[in-house]
Image (cartoon, rainbow, N blue to C red; front, side):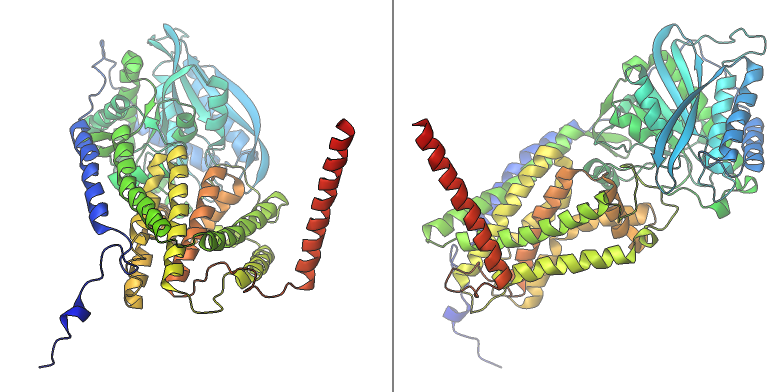
Length: 625
């Protein structure tokens, strides 16, 4: 049996030493403070109540066979309803013909919009208004168009058929209203719904301030379970009583509660607001809205969207549910006003303020330990300026790459598209020009070649310099975290893994490379969560990074998010260099390589301009004196 090494050689490094600069005791102690927000969140979980039962009740008179016939007829007569085409005009006339015999006047609301993939087109929303006792409006929407790849019987002939049936129940062949609603009801057959919800966006502009509640009907005849889509284009969703009322109506008619995104995906939707459905633009305007459907997150393909493949039973169930939902909203829409932030856990909800409080508390251990590490470096007189300059060089490289990407979008090298959720019908990876990608790669390489001489190690790096590099990156991550808190605290779920994992890279500096790589990899779980959400829910697969790139090029990803991503990428680069032992502090003047002719010319030009400015300032002061 081999002899054990001496006890002194097996002793754990002392706390606060270069081998253990991050205090585990401080880190664990700070986590105890997170228990208070967790306790508050636990007591805030509650079960929402639906709106009260309306009196008198409107009988369920949804004609399932009529709805199936309408959807089949629309798909057979006008299979290609791409906005601006002859088929789209024919479909609009068809909708008008279905409603005219019931005394319902269809008002065309014409507008033009830039549509992803097809350019600027003339569109028309068809609006049927049923006056009520109150001028406040309840809107029912369904998009009339399709992407032209199939007959569109389910997507969205089924939604239009249900919309027509709902509107008919408030009409009469004699011209007199069979039912007078409490609120003004607005039925909208939108255009451009398959191309970024263009019709719903226009409707929110023309009816902003009037609508107190809305719901959208989309792909009601799929073979999947009934489903409610809650996500919006801002971190807010419809109020809980509204959503619970819709769930109860579906439960009554379908015998099961509608499916929703899991709690994790709901949190991702609040952190990165994104949806392909028409409730998105309404929620962005503060209108409580949701979408009822039986389809998946990704719209059905052309091969499964024929009249013969529609689920008639599901269409009838959701048709009756929407009719009853309209009745409940008409009786008490004011009892569930506005939008809110929360996450469903089964039948119960966790308020958004509680989630934000927990996320902010989870940030505290990292911030305390990062500040403590900075203080230790100051007490040891460890120079942080070279490490911060090294981070600055990496940040400059990512800023350069981002600016080139934005410039290519402005001059039209990338596929042009409006800043909306882009349709998924075309594979995002096939839309990028190869020459543009090569040019971006070449210019990014130029930027890296300029930055690399200041980042590549030219001598052995000491332990104190590596600690300074880690501290500088952690301080940069702290600033990034504060920017996230200022913009959207829910997005901390993408950042927290890197904060808490990379905090310990300084402590595992002397460990084997596999340990260091494992700690480094754990920090990438946050961005991986976002990519997984898009890849799995929308079946994008390996096209997910390209699709995110398209969203960024179109401007759907906000500038603040891009700035945060650039700061995080620079910190990730510095941490990666430390992990693989390729980190070097920014060299001082004695260690730098001599300037080349180009850099020397730029330096002289800058110095000349500065000298001229100083001389001009002195002369102006002399004249004034």
